[in-house]
Image 1 (cartoon, helix red, strand yellow):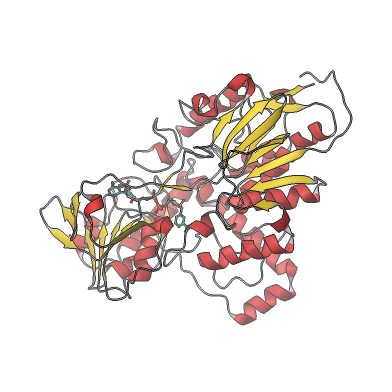
Image 2 (image 1 turned 30 degrees about the vertical axis):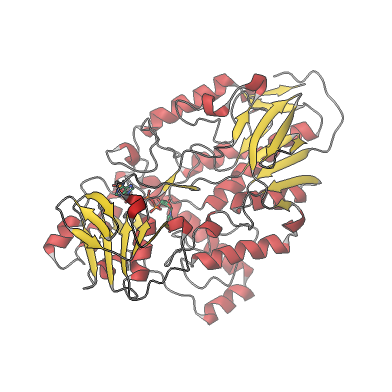
Length: 489
Ligand code: NAP
């Protein structure tokens, strides 16, 4: 650690990329900490990240709403245990308004390149202009880039077609024949919402999913009133859901057999709700529960058993003007086709080009997979930090809490620079290798590598997850281990 040149305390110019949940958090917390020169760059015209992009019918968050909120901005007015997406977007808009973030956010401002040069970061915007900052925080989200399958004849489809994250609300659905490709968390929610509305719903399933039947009861007005009158009750509810999840599911996925057996039992019992044994067989996965992201729904099995719902398991061979042709030769005629085919969860801030010390490219550094030091920083990229970066605990945790803990950690590092103790902070190569070696080793015990295909795995088969307990994450985020960083004069 080189701290020989101690300078004066100084204001830092901070660029935050993205005005979703974690970018807004940066605006709030950095301003609270006295940072006066903050710019939040947002490529879209509106804030909200994933909650802005996803507007599909049935959208909700499967983290209980009272826990899926900033810890310092709890909300008494959630309407459901798992509230709908529109309500979550309104929550973020309201919080952004309350904290006066409007003057920090630059809309339609896509960053195409971040280049470290002369001890600073030069950001290039899509319009070619450049701006200089001392610190960059990438808050670009995980599930941001829609994935489309490559199926012959896609462009010939005569009806409307779109990805679930680009829902075209101008397309009528009532009384139509709708096809959905994919059976992930998204598709399951769409199916439950659409079956009562459409003439025919064809669900094209490549792989069945395990489904945990979590009910989604509404909160009564009396309950909301009680939350309004008792911040303590709200806090207790926030903490109840955090603990509940940490002690059960979070342990199960990293090797706690007892917890996993309970979840398996619930999923298997849930399948008994499928009356037709042939349909039940088609919906029964042949891999371990929670290997793919576990789906929470107590409505999907009822929906898929409706007479106008059809589960199609013959593989898709082509898309034609009239619909989807499957390998058994059948044409499934459709008016609307929805790609609920997921996202590239490994792109992070890319396609933005990030060039660190000596022109080192982040894309090149991540050729063998995205790697970071404790998810938040990368060697060779001084004063460049990430929220929800590689191997953040993204399973079924509330990403809001994760981002809060990561930002508090990053702020401690930034503080050294602001105090003039150094000009930049970068994790060492050695510490990053050590962290990632341990991570890879721990990954072997997790359910994600037990033999299934999922978006968790990158193209080398490495899960994008945190393989340890939540308690370990909490511990690691409490205080930076400065011996693992290079503090440059
Ligand atoms: P996903 O879980 O990645 O599922 C994509 C689906 O598309 C899979 O069923 C996949 O089949 C299928 N698929 C992909 N390419 C295909 C092809 N060429 N032919 C046929 N099927 C194909 O995506 P998602 O449902 O959008 O969910 C992504 C993540 O978003 C979730 O895991 C979760 O983290 C988050 N999410 C959360 C909520 C929530 O309630 N919190 C709701 C929605 C989404 P295979 O399984 O065979 O690959």
